[in-house]
Amino acid sequence: MWRWMVLVVSWTLAYAQTPSAGNPPMLPASRLGLSVTQENGAITFRKAELSFTYVEGIGWTPPLEPGLPPPQGTLLPLEVIRAVGLVSAPEARVRFSADASRLRLVLDLPENDAVQPAPSGLAPYPGRLELSLPYFVPGLEGLRVAGVEVEARYEPQSTLLTLQAPPGRFYRYRTFLLSNPSRYVLDVYYLEPEREEALQPGFRYRELWAWTPEPVRMYWLEASPGRWRMEPVGRPGERRLLPEMAPGALAILNGGYFDGPTGTPIGLWVRSGVPLSFPFGRSALFWQDDTVFAGRPRFTASVQLMDGRSLRVGLNLARARYTVHTLPGLVGRAGENVHLVRGEQIIATYPAPYQLPEGLWALTFPAEEPVARTGETLRLVVSLEPPANHALEAGPLLLQAGVNVFDPNAEPFRDRAPVEAVAAQSAVAWSQEGALFFIVTEPMRPEALARVLQEQGLWGAIRMDGGGSAQLWVQGRLRNPGNGLLGARPVVSGLALYPRP
Image 1 (cartoon, helix red, strand yellow):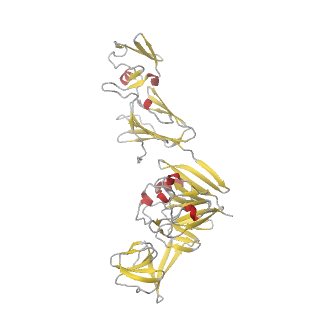
Image 2: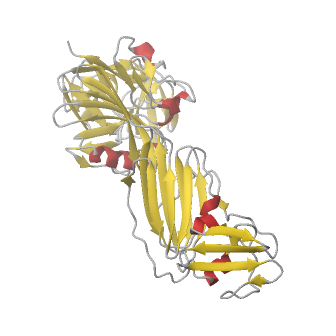
Image 3: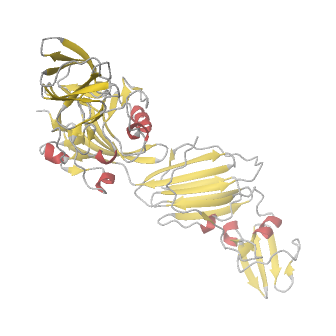
């Protein structure tokens, strides 16, 4: 089903002349292919073999009824146009909206209309678009769009519409039908052109249009196979602008999720084999040398007690009877206790739920089954699969082996915005041959992003943090201008791309 977008600037129900009470709407004779001559108080309209005249003070001459509404200069009443046979197509009323990049026409079709024009789908046009609408559409001659030349001409069985959009744009149009009530919709787009910029051998920057079905601008950095080196940058607990994290990088993309007030990373973060943050339970990006993949990390976690025993535990959202929590916030459930741990020492024990502060971790357990005592030591041990030199958790997963695997319910998101909201998107993607892509988009849904990336033939992709955090910096400049309206946003982690020596 078509989803109406709130992109309409204004709706206008238009005829060439807004009638006052008792006056019928009128059309210019020239739009009907008529010539006009005036002589001795009579005005005559001609087209090929057709000729009809109105005499001041008498009315219309045969074959028209004299009492039909009079013309006003060269404007003809619709009743006269019908009576003389200039049009016989069914009449459709028109509404339109326009902005700097799109014109939308909506035709309200007559009831029980037997004429059903076929939808066009999305199609290019060379700046000039000519359409034959199988309806009589009075009102198009009143259409005014800044920068767009509009011409409407009325034929017996159709209305000929010609649109000339501004030069140097990216042109697409589509038509589709709506039912209940019956409507015919024409969207004409005249967008900023797509562009491509070669940065250096093996690297190029592109700006493309995706269709969701509304047009969405996408900003791409593409690195050829074997030419790139990627590093995770940033520091847990510290929010900084991306260019400050990696001043010499060719390109930088924002990284994974984080807790805003504390700057605590939410999820797995491994740099050069060293874990900086533990798994939260969602998909992660893994890479080593020029091999990239993404998926749900498999991990086992345990705590080693002071007496040498080892106890298997759950980790963060992967709860178990005994669960370790590494992120600040409310932890534990009623009926549990909480060991509060700094480093490897239990500094306090509280009843759950308990507000875990930044810089500490906690072990929750059934209140009747204490694990250790305050002052004793607990050592957290986490084993991760698959092994990789670098990893950064984000999600949701978008593509895997060329297949669209986006599933909003497959990963634990208590805040549903990353899987449901229309927002700026950020993603890392790769081809089967090993090319790497940093991608940021204007606001769209993650499910649409997954579909678009699959249509582009990519092999794998994962969503990174989005919304206001979605940023692509190339050669020290922020390339997605939508984010620039709010200014560059400090984040906790990023992905820096360098040319491989």
